[in-house]
Image (cartoon, rainbow, N blue to C red; front, side, top):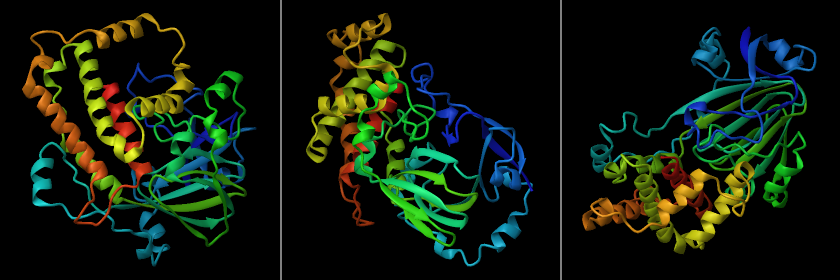
Length: 374
């Protein structure tokens, strides 16, 4: 059958992006092109790489979605029997208080969901280092693949794109293409990481836990099936969206928004310090070096006029007759930080689970970045 394949001429390494996530113009920068072409191709063309001369083809699509609507999804699924073992039910049941807080603000509540995604690629195609938030049961059906795996504790070493970037969860460091001297000098941490190498043969099944980074290379023409199931980590963190920050009185002023985001960030980072072993300034500096230095350069580089204006805003005393002069508003800020920290660092007594520190750190960093993006 025909499919819509991703196509690249110069590189066999594919970076996946979600443009709707981008907080442009704040984070429209990238160390590489973020887009790739797509074109119609047959399964044989994708597997054999028999497209335009020098072209690399790569396909992924969820069975039953619009991307595969022209296929006989029922026939595909019928060939995947039995498949019950590909489903992981890891989402705790919602409490009544959860439902009251979530609706109507959140139309979709966390639930156990599993999607089956097909991957087709020719020899040499590589998917960029990234992590998924859910469980991934990765079945190798045809051909051989090689995977590099990094534990969650190594995520700060991978120079991930920022949380509000279109390429969020992807590493900024190509594994195939040599980077220029400037980018190389800004991404030194990747060289200190220690991944595990795994080779998959037809019939192998690999479990990739949530927040475990991985890069996947096809050693031969390859067909794989990834079964993604919602994780406890995803479901618990979804509750952070039910905790609106008290920023309504700041929305009319860019300076006030910046001060409010900085204030709430600091309150959360202070609560995170005993659990992560990092003071707020330490964590922020490491976050900048990991995610932002490749895009914006070192912190000791000269500030432009926009940055200087923001610095003056943050260093100024609290403006009179604003939310910052209201003790009740400060109480709401403390309460919000406390509730977010509780999600991250307290034990889920109903499910008898807690975040491992490395995953909690990623979520803290993402939360702070989302505030900055706002």
